[in-house]
Length: 321
Ligand SMILES: NC(=O)c1ccc[n+]([C@@H]2O[C@H](COP(=O)([O-])OP(=O)(O)OC[C@H]3O[C@@H](n4cnc5c(N)ncnc54)[C@H](O)[C@@H]3O)[C@@H](O)[C@H]2O)c1
Image (cartoon, rainbow, N blue to C red; front, side):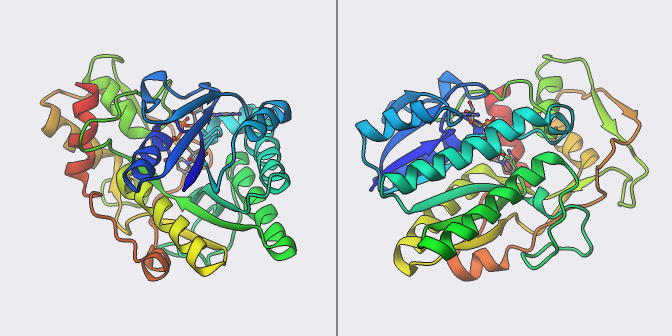
């Protein structure tokens, strides 16, 4: 199987690349390295430096190579930034992805695995969140993911383009065999920020509110180990190839940890004191987000195997220490 993986130099993409290579696929990584890391470019892959925002970059890529399927992870992922600079998200997440879908269709590729996000749901009306939950994103980032899911559904219904929209919850952890070593640039998510404090790259972290309706007042999120996440892409690809259908599934582990629990585990594993300040809540933050992943389990037979907090933090600390 010849795969194109966009965003394959990024945090999740580099782990998906490993899973694809382990399965015996030939992989081309297409990435503009805007947030990706050169260190993450797997030596067993072909690397093309280009942007999905550029139709000419895509056209020269597809002219030179033939692919059986595309795994699409390239994009911007910071919800807060998307509210301040929506044009960047329009450009990279919507226009770029539409360019890619168009290029796939024009080049006879009709299978795409798409990095969607739990942020398509918005404020939870019940927990755990299943795929039937209403879709009402509360930030522009979430809207960009939903917009692409909607386009994919139209193309699937109209011309049989097949897709898997994978709604990731919070990706965390690193490859257990230490094959991915690139750190996230300017991280906006909790675990890399706590790691930066533990490894003395920053003095302290801000905790945005400790008066949420949770056991210790801090926000609870569903952390999924990135290797479990990566495997789900390969499982989804197999499923699409076998069943000739499109699917949308949650990828989380139906269990959440609070900000303070993450800090406590990082302290325990790293032996470092984590300095933090409690500051005001951020607009749009939610108490608790937890996934129901029974559909992914039912359709793909997927089970998260590495997503306990200790494994997540240990594998991350190995990279940051
Ligand atoms: N990290 C999470 O918890 C999470 C949760 C839900 C969804 N996602 C989605 O998963 C995908 C990957 O996230 P990540 O955490 O690995 O982020 P990342 O920033 O590490 O990876 C994104 C990659 O895409 C590349 N890229 C960005 N814009 C591009 C463009 N226009 N053309 C070509 N390459 C481009 C970047 O250089 C980077 O290598 C994103 O689409 C993100 O929205 C991530």
